[in-house]
Length: 372
Image (cartoon, rainbow, N blue to C red; front, side):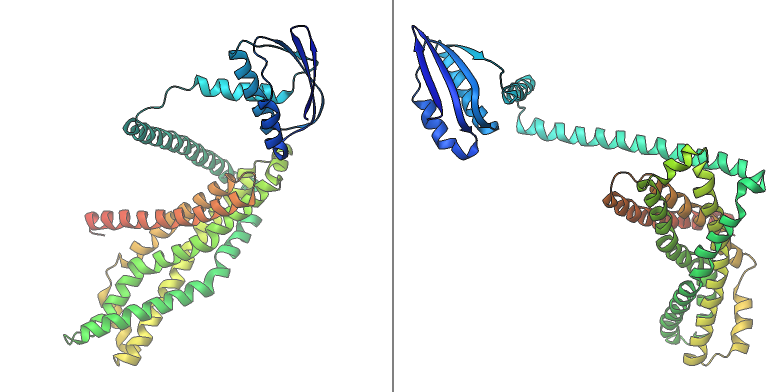
């Protein structure tokens, strides 16, 4: 038995003992079913219980509620188990909830809640992003007034890491893509006997669009993710908090050098990508179309407008700012776990590439309107 009973007049004292837990559910139910104390005054003594979990407490509480409705009166001897308070709180919270709406109302409510939650979250993110960019602008202005605040050694290091170390992969990708464009263009143009225009196709596409766009996408995947990961790890290791405790402006130390370094490095990488793209087009034109270098260079000069090269190069600093700002912003948002670090690093790359392509589309529309 899980209890001892002692009768005195119209009263009854129940001394609970043993294990009132999930392992003894069948025994608990059978023991409670034997009790029928309608109209009696029952004293409950919990001092003999060895183990009590929510399963046992739930069954005992249900029995007490049924006995109360049948006219029983109960009194707890000693300390009442904390499980009962927890169950009371859960049941009170459930009772406080409004009635269940109809299925159509539920779906409508869920949709409205989803829209509202998304709008609030987007508003919070927009506010945080504007605050971050404002803080960066203020720090940049202060840094430009002093070489000490500019931290030139850190800027040079980031130019080396984001620029010089990226030259091999940027050169290879630009060369291969230009070869592909030249090959496909030559195949189509040979049908009309206009294979000489392959040179125009390669030169204009590489210098205006493909050179800077491919370079920016490569840098976004390479350096944008590195910025988010480096700053995110510093967040996890409390290194940024340590900088703050020492009175150091971590935006000046961590964000501005990366931003300046990438703004300098990306235009230089774009020039290298343009050169390698033209080299790839010249090689394929020589091998496939028998257009020698002595013919290729004058044709390129005739095909290009004065603004063609600058139309591509002007985009590079803007793309660099977008990549650096998104990477550092997402790195600053890292909290609590390595999983969050991975998620925000991936988000930084995806958003950087999206913003680069979106900005390129805006540039294309503006250049067409300006006839640039």
